[in-house]
Length: 494
Image 1 (cartoon, helix red, strand yellow):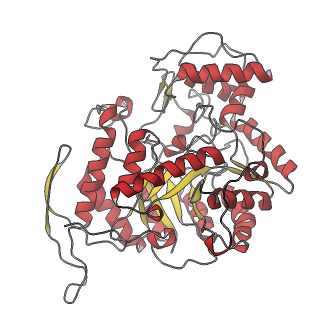
Image 2: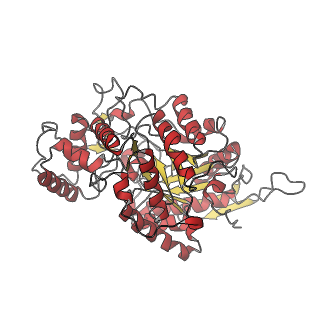
Image 3: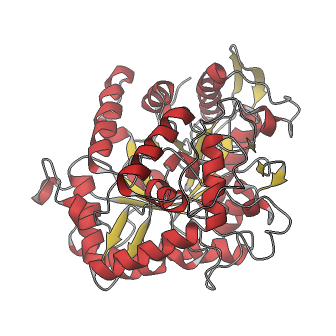
């Protein structure tokens, strides 16, 4: 449950920064450095052949799709001439309208509460700013009609009454399309921006988040349903007393069209999985292979019964990337080119520094990996999620480098910049379908490598093939995000 769900998705490595920023900043580091994704060069078609039990006929599941605005995450190839602003409303509008044209379930925004730093300098990708999600989505509600609108908002540095009010307002303004991606932080660096002073013990993150969500739902339930003589319902006094929050009063916003906005969660720890099973409607996961996806899917779904929930009550949607081509070979060639753009020589060293926690600027990106070990207590990188076990990741990178004769840059590309689905539109559509029909996912949150036009080809070329397969809607059937996802109406408590 990190502050940046794109990092949690573990899908890509560092990208070239916006033009003109390099002289002022430290450069961009890899989005993640776990070395867990993309260990082979198989295409989407190759992975799709590794299947388990596949649903057929009337038993086939519908695929859910969401669009992640790439913004400041390091999937984006800023050096591409088609790349545009990550803060101009026109960019948000373009991607949202494209997603709605493709009948996507929802549009997803990440969050950044502090400008990230590397070696004491502002991170390249942050020099153009990180706008507040709910404000952007409120504007998008006016230019979209069916698309869900999901905001990442931190439960550590907000308060239940204020945030519940803002989310309920968005749900009303959009006609029932609001969603909240719950994230937490124990990062004192980020917390310096807030009166809380940044301190929250890591073990308390989910304790606070669970009570935060429960309290918000109490507030959303505090109004009665509309009825004769009361078109908006009636407010009732609420009172919550718990370890994290003690509040009472009257909520100012009537019960919203969905009852509760949809809740998304992105953590993968034991605590995160249990929190998802108890409280979330969607899990934004990082498991991008069939084997890992099935294991995660089975584990999360098995936990639901303990909370009186059914498997269909929680959707699992990994964050994924894609590259299309007229042939699988062309798509592979394009994907390799994109990876080289995402991991420039400079970015390769910065990715290495994120793992090692040391200044490695003297190393040649086309040379071998450092022989020295990582510094486990380093504060070289601030405001970014560092790998949990740097020594283990470094050992894995060294083993890969030695086995394949890879340089630093080649190793970073191999371990952190592998796209999830590569091939012709037919190949990618088949692979996506296989993931869902074999219970590795319920759908996908797509993260394009271009802002804002990176989703255009997918909508034009892949969506029609999914529709032909009968696994994706041709029209919206309801008006709320819950209806798109097939989620049950929330049970009122109190």
